[in-house]
Image (cartoon, rainbow, N blue to C red):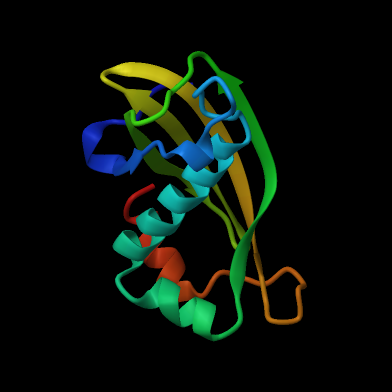
Length: 139
């Protein structure tokens, strides 16, 4: 996976807390998924300027359909990491994103995530047109 250009990348800083680590003080592998989820939420909030909140209020949501993860390094207790997120493409009812976790210029984890949009009934739904347009500007 290739790192995105700065203009297309949303950066979310995250401090590693004790609850994120195992007994050795190293981030437990599954917690990188939590970091990515937080970062995607912040990216959507920033890119969509209120449209994402309206989508959630209407009972719609994005759910993970697929996620591939490549672990190259490990963060430790009290590290400050950055999750770099960028939208790769947007479909009618789905989007793909690339997310990487960095510490001091070292890539620790790279993920590619495919998200599906669902309606309040839990069934696939089209991404609202105005939200899709806002996201596409950054893809």
